[in-house]
Image (cartoon, rainbow, N blue to C red):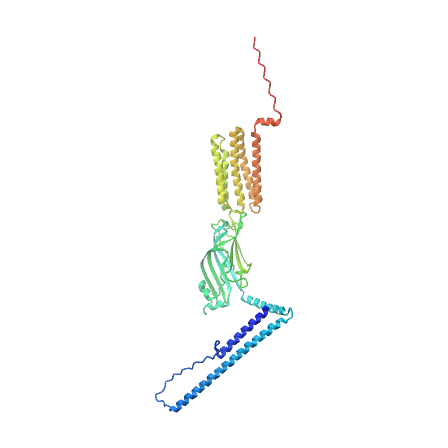
Amino acid sequence: MSPGWLALALVAAVQGAIIDANVMRREDIDPKSGRVHKEKPERHHAKSERSVEVPASGDVVEHHADAAHAAHGAHAHKAQKAHKAQKEHKHHKEHSHKELAEMLEQESHLPEGVLDASLLEVSAQASQASQASQAASLREVMFGVYCRRVFDVDVLQKTWTGDIVITTSWNDPLAAEVIPTNKEEKRFATDVARKLMWLPDISVTNRDFKNLEVISSSVKVWSSGWATKVERMLVTMTNDFDTKAYPYDQQTLQVILASEKLMADELVLKPHTDKTLLGVKDDVLTGTGFIGLDGTAKPGYNISSFQEADALLVKSRGLFEIHILRSPASAGRQLFGPTFILLSVSYSVFFFPMVPAFAMPRVASGIISLLGMVTFMTKNKMPDSWTDVYLESICLQIACVCILSLSMEIVFHTCKNEDFAKQLNFEYKVAFPVASFLIFFLLLAFSAGGFNDVCCYLVRTLIFLLMVGNFVRIYRRTRPAQAEKGAEGAPAEPAEPAEPAEPAK
């Protein structure tokens, strides 16, 4: 049996039930027993006068007999009407079942395509009716977001906390009924307004779990049917941050709004036409370490709406964005200052005298600086960012200082070449700052974060080539002189011993 005929059968059954109910209601018939409900006679209480003539006994008997006969006739008439209604009801049910059987029998004799075409036509008409009803029930809500303060931007945890004001406006003719007749407008608390009228229930959907505190909320209604809800809240929101260029990064703080209950075919969000309800405060970024993209304290913003579909979840969402830039001063305090201090302490080993008494201070300065740099990298690691490349380069330079310091001690004490050791100390003292600045400028050239891997490979390659060239030079200068002569040619023949001189006569 096709779905179309099942629907027709269901409609016929419902119509039969409605007709049965109407018949029973009209005849006042009990649906279980089929009997007519007896109407209780009204009791008329009238005061009898004291001077009433008492009828004769014969008249009383005759009067009671007539009343009993009339009551019996009325009861018989009602029973006859109930029996007739039951017959009509039974006949109607048999007729409905007969029509349904004829329709089902006719279905089997229909040619192919006729029933499908009919169902397609009915489906198209139903779809048009559904679209018309959806258009009639679709509500448009305007929204505005004003950010009063940004308290914290946590790039590692991917959250930010703000003090925001959300304004939503919509037109509802039924909302004007809650206003007193002698007033043009009326303000209600949100809890009270929710019991009197329809509210869109717009909320922040990218909030961090339940980290949302509503400070104030109210609804204002005008006699024209317009209603506006104003809500101030402190909320922590989740946000995606691009840290590839950290600490020279630009970020976008997002506030995403949507209805908690209604889908996109029932409610559509649009940016508010009143520009005074949108924007950010002048000192919104105070104490966060961020500034606007143009270098001023007040950042830029933009507002828009979009539709998002995730499986059957289709929502109309509002988006408010604040564009910020990390302040260079905060990057210097948090990153460049500590690393330059550690690098300078390690560089000081080249200023110690080349005497055995300063061997231990020289080694200790380099090792302590290296351990401090490793600890700093562990606590300030920013995943997948330019900072990783920068910290790695500083750590490699401090490690190179430790290795160069040990090479000088080996040349001085093991190879017993004090002059060459002092020469190496002077060369390192001059060449190391030059190599460090070259590496730093190379890092700044790739500070945009787009080629962090390439920059990392270049720094590693440069340091490796400089260290290899230095060790090759040291090896050539410190190998034994006998080995150099053996490499030049065959060794010279030993001189014959001189004959002893004859004693003087």
